[in-house]
Structures are given as structure tokens and as C-alpha cells.
Image 1 (tube, helix red, strand yellow):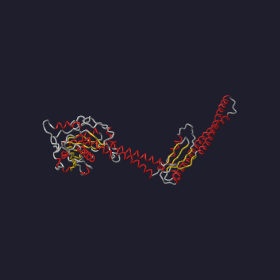
Image 2 (cartoon, rainbow, N blue to C red; image 1 turned 120 degrees about the vertical axis):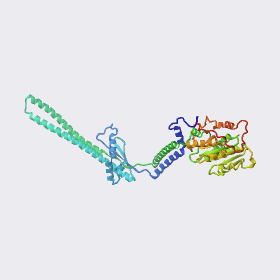
Image 3 (cartoon, rainbow, N blue to C red; image 1 turned 180 degrees about the horizontal axis):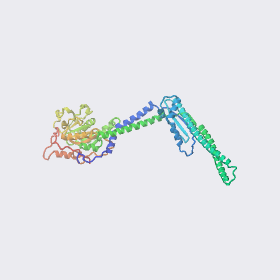
Image 4 (cartoon, helix red, strand yellow; image 1 turned 90 degrees about the horizontal axis):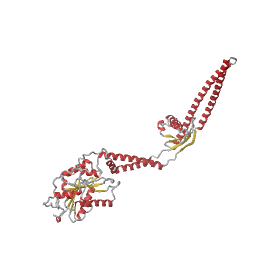
Length: 516
């Protein structure tokens, strides 16, 4: 498979998206922590406003045991109207807008006939005053509505009573007019009128009773609708309020951080997974260094152990074939310098001289390593190869040269072969974009530098993808020996390993091999 990546990629790779968000945990975790701190700060700087509560008993003409709360819900809706709010503000002498005041209080149904009114205000005294004014205003309004409804019903009953009484009077007159008649027809007519009279009299009495009951019910409703629990300040726990604001801030910060991390993952296109870095560079990942801690680096001892273990792996990779090899960094200059120093120490244990070439910009030789043992010399990159081996006593000996350089934008591509015709790439996951990884692979191929393998720094801890090129023996780690044999034809003498090796014939560009 070649690096043109002709296969169809998904429009949105969920594994890559999740890995990118997880890798950017140093972005969204601090944002979540910042939201938490902001919530706590708001709880301290802006404590919750005082809240006053009052409970009101509300009676209705249509009260039924199976009401379901529809009537009290109507009362709450009427409570939260601008008309009621305006009357309350006038009563307390406030200049606030009714629309704003409506947002500061609410009604909560406790039962079919009990309602709790809560009011927020700047001070406790103001909250109590507004709660009392709100309850009294609502009760007065409810009583007026009940009384108006009762008066309307009573007026209707009285009108019906008068009409029925007028019909009864008419029937009485008709009966009186037929009282002296003796013919059978008149007698039948009188009998019908007497029956009609009895019905109208019963109806009149019924309407009179209904009117009396309506008046009595209205009085009971008006008297029963009252405050059952006087206004009082609701105790507010600062700890609970602070915890709520802190959780809200934490949630908002986490959501914003995750969203920003997801957008950056899609937009920046910076590979994090081993399989992607391997495919774009055209070289296998042969070792990796663990990710850094969220705050600060991994503890010194553990970090040094991991680095030395990786350096030992790299030293075994180049051991047995003295010559020149470079360690080129991409987003991990410190790690590359330390790995190169540890490699030099490991290789020097063979008893062969090792020259460490420091070609990292803005880093002097003292910053490359803290201390090196015998048999290791440090040379500044600007003096190599003109400076030659650092001591005449080791001229002609087979030794190693390890050049430390950079692949960041502006790297001296044509000057990299002097550091070594083989290289180990030290790449920080998520540092470089896909386009730049392609540029690195192409420039190294044009310079005739063979990539032995990749050291991945700060990988995704949950990355389970394969970082090996299964169809690239010329660049994979296991193919290095075969490549070396192919470079030395049978019957010819290998070049002197102690001297700076000449660049080999330019091979075909290691196309960005695709991971199996």
C-alpha cells in the first residue's frame, strides 16, 4: 500500500476525534477547573439574595376532591401577571418595572387549595414587605373576583326569579278569569292552569333558595381565603448555594473545553494516533516515552528511567555497526537531546569512542547533557565535520557519531546529512500537522537519509493502534540489517566506520506507507 492514501477515509473519524480530545486534556481539564473556581468565586462575591416565603389558603366555588390542581394552577398564573405586580409595586412604593418584578417572585402549589409565594429582594426587609404586599394584593384580587362572580350569578338568579314570578302572575290571572266558568272545556283549562301554577311556584322557591345559597357561599369563600403562614425569610445555606454554583461552573467549563478541543482536533489536523504518525512519516514507531502529567512533568526519577530505557532500545538498534546516526526532533528538543546523551553513554560502554554533535539551535553544549562519562565527546554542530574527531589518540578507531538536530520549520534540510545518513525521529504526538509530516518525510528522502524509526513522545495513553509499517522493510526497524547488507555489495570492502560516512545513493522517496 502506498502513501497516496487512495482508500476512502470517513468524513469524521470518531476514534481520531476522541483521541484528539483526550490528548488535549491539558486544555479542557483546566477550563473545567476554571469554571469550578469561577462558580465558587461567584458564590463568595455574589451570595444569594434573601428570599421571603408566605403561604396562602385559596378557596374556590368549584372546589372538588378530584380537582387535580387545575384551580390552584390558574391562581398561580393570575399571580404572575403584570397587573398584580403593578399593584404590589404601588403598594410598597417601588419604581421597578412590573415585567422585572414578575421574574423575582413565583407561586408553588402545595395542595389543591394552598399556595406558597416566594419573593426575592435585595434585603430581607424588602423581601418581607414585598411578600406581604403580594399576598394581600392577591387575596384582595381573588376576593373581588369571587364577589363579582357571585354578584353576577345572583343577578342571573334574580332575573330568572322575576321572569318566573311574572309567568306565575299571568297564570293566576288566567285562573281567576276562569273561576266562574262551568262548562267542561273551562274546567279542563283550569286544571291545566293549576298544574302550571304549581310548577312555577316550585321553581320560584328553588330560585330563591339558590340565591340565598349563592350569597352564603360567597361569604365563606371570601372569609376562607387568607394567609395561613405569615411572611418569613427562607433560611439559605451558603454551602449549598456555593456547591450549586460551583457545579454549574464546572459543567459549563467542561462543556466549553470539550467543544473547543473537538473543534481544534478537526480543524488543526494534527495526528495523535501511532498509526497516523507512522503512515504520514513512512517509518515505524519503535519506542515511546510516556505522556507528561497534567500539571508539570513526570517525576524526575521515573521520567529518567523511562528515558534511559528508551535510549537503551535505540542504542541496541544502532549497536554493532559503528558509524553516524542522527537524532532529529519534531516538537521535542529537550527529549531528543537527553535521548542522544543517554544513547552516547550506552554506546560508549562498548569501549568505542562516541562523538555527540549538538546542532540544536539556541542550545549550547552544556544544555545537551548534564554529565557524560569517559569516551564521549560533545562537539558543536557549527564545527562539525570540520573539527573532525576531538582527540588525536582515537584517530582511525571505529566509533559512533550521534548528531542531534531539528526538523521544525526552517530546518537546514541540505545540511542534515552531515549529522548522519541514518536517523531516528523524535516526534511529539499532536505537535505537527499532517502536511508538515509529509514535508519531513519528503525532505529526508530527498537528502538520502534513511529513517530507522520513530520515537513517539507524549502519546495518547489509550492509543491501541499499531505503529508498524508491515510492508516497508527498507524503513522498518527489522529491515535495517537487510538494508545494510544491500548497501555493501559482495566482494567490496565496507567503508571505514570511524570516518564520517558518505551519503548513500539517493533511494526512492519512502512513500508514506499505510499501516496494515
